[in-house]
Image (cartoon, rainbow, N blue to C red; front, side, top):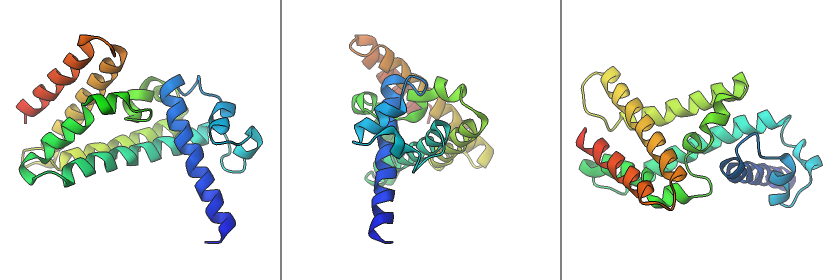
Length: 190
């Protein structure tokens, strides 16, 4: 890869990372291209050298954020003993640090905006969600893959809902209570 292509790839990655923060803070609709580009020291004109539209950026951003989430959960499981890997995954998702991250889980942070997005963005969001579910299914009990998938879907939906409510109630006792109760419920049902 030549230097110009390398710089372009680096800039594109910075734009996607900036969009994660903006989407979490302001929502997808509330985020402006000017704000996203300003955060990386560029103008709006530079945006179109990397993306065709805001929807294109959102689709690539949700794909990258989903992969980052799987990487985050993988890291938690890799560093844990095999018998407690699932517990480590749940604890790494349902914790104060993850609640307070500027990026964090895209599904808990951007969910309603993703639901209102165009078909290609929603398709990318579903594809990313399926990757997270497939990862979680590896840690579920049961012989049948359909049962492991069912448990993984329920676990992810529980975690997303708990993280979302914890963010809504941030600063109150309810916020920590929601994280604690969801964690305990997921680990007890394992």
